[in-house]
Amino acid sequence: MKSLLDYVGTVTDIRQEKKVLHKMMDIIMLVFFAMLANADDWVEMEVFGKEHEDFLRNYLELPHGIPSHDTIQRGNGNKNQKANHIVSVVDERGFCLGEKRVEERTNEIKAIPDLLESLNIKRTIITTDAMGTQTEIVKKIPGKHADYVLALKANQGNLLEDVMDYFSDKELLNKCAYKKTVEKARGRIEKREYWQTEDISWLSQKKGWKGLRSIILTRNTVKGEDGELAIEERYFISSLPEGIEVGSKAMSLKKKRYAIGTNPEKHLRMIMNL
Image (cartoon, rainbow, N blue to C red):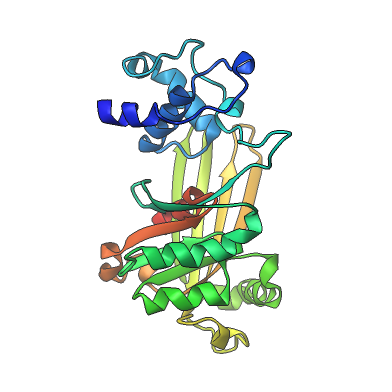
């Protein structure tokens, strides 16, 4: 722990000193401890800090207590410079295996192949946000004996629309591999549902995506304390065969999960929940 604290203490703090209440090292270490405790977002990190403040003071100064979630998530941009974007590779334990700084978020597309080339990703499952869903990036993954689950958004145009149309057909949806989990936490109920199918012979873009074998729909339904429902649906393409996500392929449990992007943790959580 001392070595870790000494290392974090070498980070240069470029903030304006008169406006600073919380030490940079305290913020970094709070995030580190909170992530080890499976905190998923900035608010949860603040909650973790307040609940474990006595423990954290064994290692951190915290002269003004636990920083707010707004302070924890503050970027490194200012009036003189744009904020840096860091493309990271995170494994299923939450550890960063590699990272690359890019000047603009769009340069993430160029950084991901470099990161893939620098790592031994054999027998892993790779996931990225929609920015990384590019045919040139996909070519590298099966070539290094890995699998992928890649998010689809509007940047893929007709591919997303075609996948959405498929899953909107209830008859086809009922034929897909299916899994459901329900969790209760902090007064809310979250239901996660997953559908996957290898029925993609109709997909006109199939040949452009190396190793493409299945498509996936995830649906998160959250019921708050007030009884209101919030529903989020997401769509993916994957090199995985149908059935791995519902546990019928024991071999899948031996695969490690790696997430790549400027916010890889949220994509990694999707893979871990499958």
